[in-house]
Image 1 (tube, rainbow, N blue to C red):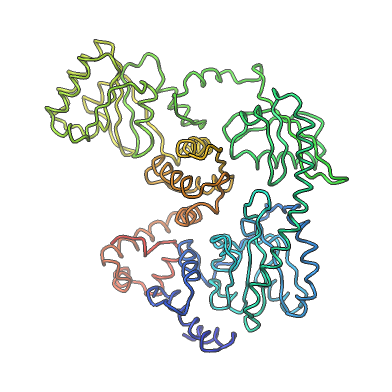
Image 2: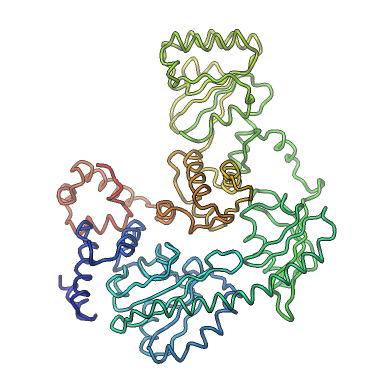
Length: 601
């Protein structure tokens, strides 16, 4: 309580501020249900997300990213607009900050020396991240989560050191791609908060977008002219691009994938800066293939504003010896390039194997592999079908299929077959072998489950399908394939690199099945040609951002969850059971990112 009073003494204490501080204190202490009308819904939701990220109000400082790369086109357009507002910043003792689409501060303009020192103390500096996942509720982070202009005043901040500040921000969208490329944020002391801040920062953001449109129109015209000049022979792949725009001919589109634009632009920008534009370089794409790339800068006077890339597939003499074998072993209708997936293909596509058992965790794609191996005309017998719930009927289905047709047979959910059924099943399958009928079966197993029953041992070979977390290199190809399955617009959907990276950090409960459900939801609801991390559901971004618990932390988190389960979710009783104070329980719940609202006790 003493700390609460101390914070009140440092901010303006009108009645609404007192109410906000009390509501914030209750929320941060774990009494989430007590937060009602004094706190705006958008702020409460942001506080909840911040807790789920495992952040703590007193310790979650901005994170410095030494890998930041400024968007030159963005900053060239924003610079003059910001400079024209310096007088207003002096009069209002405020600062203007620009972040990129990941929340990294790109620039800061402040003329007041006292405010400068305060912002320095709070790490409001170029290179520091103010994404919601790093520092909790603030205007930049809220904009990146919601896509809407936002104000966060004093006690509405999550980070305790920001309670004396108010920030208002607006999103900045690229005029061509319509993707959010950053945020503009006006920051002042909490006691200087004004209701016109939000409208003012919106106007400045709109001026930046108009300036960006002028720069972009000229740049895109130069890129298009360069593309036309180089695309005289459509048999060769040609790509013309900058940070936001990519133009390619059909030959190049067959080689590059949806996640390759950042790779290509990073390669082109590096080649231009190092003067390596006079020779062909080899580049690995997201689908695992290697291409040869030659870079030519697109100039606007002395400045390079983009690049023309001539893209060629490697000649056969440079191909790896096993490349042709990998092509032969690819499972029809399925995609993948990871080492684990290639192992699956090699094992599953052995021409000598007339019977194949496919095992793995739930949702990894066992049935898809089976159909890919034996063909879509196979007779499918599922042990979980209502018609197959007793031994006589299931065995009868199997015997009829083998005796009445020469088509391949696929047995689904072999793990559901009762031990008493197995002798009859083996007899029927032996008939299939004598008739030359190919048989494939799927079986859901845990990672360390034994496979030693007579029915399992009947099969010539067994292939284990890896979990999605073990084949993250396949994500770009899987996303493209799943998007094409659910896309009804006719236009190709491209998954941006930040979205692919976020999805790669998620532990998928039902593996490819869970990913498929997410892709269907996004493709149907968003109807966008480009899908970035900001288009992912909040729950997915939370799971992607939550840090991995290691060693003792895992044990502590499990003990807390078990105590909460045993006490029906009663936090006081759970704390007593663990022998710790309630405040310690709340602190550890926040630090470990345990979502109490989503838990089932």
